[in-house]
Picture (tube, rainbow, N blue to C red):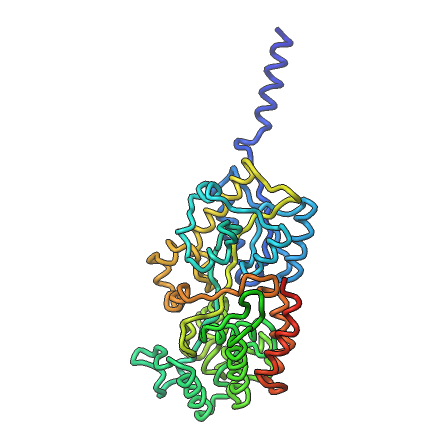
Length: 424
């Protein structure tokens, strides 16, 4: 009897020591800093509070090459995360390196999602041979910011102070000339001295002509070369006329606009919170807005990329069972709560959020959300995308060309010579 009581007591103590719910820990890696990092941390905290049975353990790594190098090496030896953020422009390289695990329809069903829930462009960017390898979280793209105060009295503001009358490159050039004549220091600002800003503007102008950077395994073949040269020459003219800054680094290019020294800024949606915060604190001394980049060269098109959620392979395997179900639960929750991510300026890829009344009330976000239907992602190659050889070419070839060191045509020949052999 004493032994029986002892066994009962031991069993009771063991049960009492167990948690009320067994937890599934999801190892999460991202590259998100600044405002993006703050917002993602809030989303992770929100998920963890609602899901005592699944807990995200997050780690933030350095953006760009360091992140993707870490992912590749960790995945190869089976020490990667359970889920990670991933730029869709990097998906072709990730697939070549066998990093990305296929997201099946069954996986999506676990997350209570389906492909048709998302905008077409990011789903296409995440797909190869009909198979999905990441779940898009947003569309982040180039947009056109404008200073309404500096444009006061011009033909480029309507009665409500909204941008109007810019429907071609001639219209835009005329607006820049008008601003210069009125004493605006730098009519249009963008990152002229860095790979990211140069590539995004160049690729937008190329795409608006119907041009393609890579076709049939060739870089800027056929009339794509002429279209690329025209894009570069337009950017060069902006600099030559004193309309755009000389070799501006990213921070300096943003500061020109926030200080009221530029009538326009070509930059990503991610700077929207910067100007909202400055406006709220009373440190922004002008009215501003942001719109989809107008069809300056005949076609609605703008450079875009997506942050997405991906599951890395672990060597020759991938996570399965309850762990994979937990990961998909995380992804599904994040998509349905993407309004918290939209606050960072991004356009949610999950259409139910973008079409919601809450999102429609967000400005200028709701105004430029139209670009989701005109987004142009980088080609599906291993030489393009974030921290790629194409970005290197933007810095080392296109940037010098727009500073007057060579013509657009000569720059194109150098780009082709530099990148063709790297294209596999």
